[in-house]
Amino acid sequence: MTARLVFNIMAICGAATFAGAMLNIGLSFGAYWKSLAPADFLDWFGANGQFIGRTIPLFAIPTLIGLAGSLWLDWTMPAARWLWLASLAALAGIAVITFAWHLPTNAAFAARSVPVAEVPATLDLWLRLHAVRIALGLTSAVLGLVAISR
Image (cartoon, rainbow, N blue to C red; front, side, top):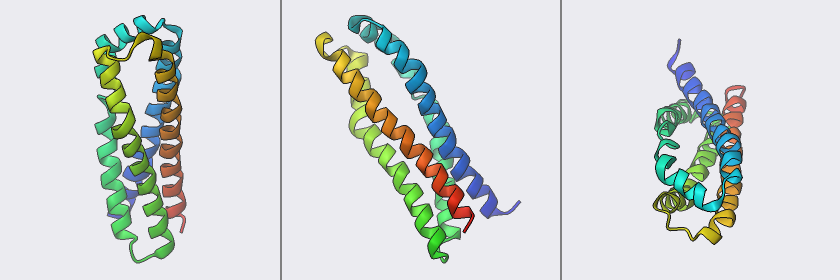
């Protein structure tokens, strides 16, 4: 097994796993959260919210290592290089949305500092932005697949 193959596998499988985990959170937890009364949702999030992101580093870190290695090894191949850069940009988009919106909002939900009347609208925006993160994760994986075909 070559280093190129290992990096490619890490990049593509990592991005796909990341997208799958986010899809599970969005479909499973999102539907459940929306079924709760706003105060009950805040109580649930305060008690359990810390468990949601625990596994993210387990696939985000290998994904970044795989992308960096794939980009480095394909740097002299312009078509592949641009695809790996686009794949990395998709993951950067996830990071921006996560750090700018999801982490602060998660903390506000957990601290129960979101007014109960604002919970439904805030949760709806959380889920819409989460759908963007899912799409970016899938985009990253697909761009990696296209890059290895070049």
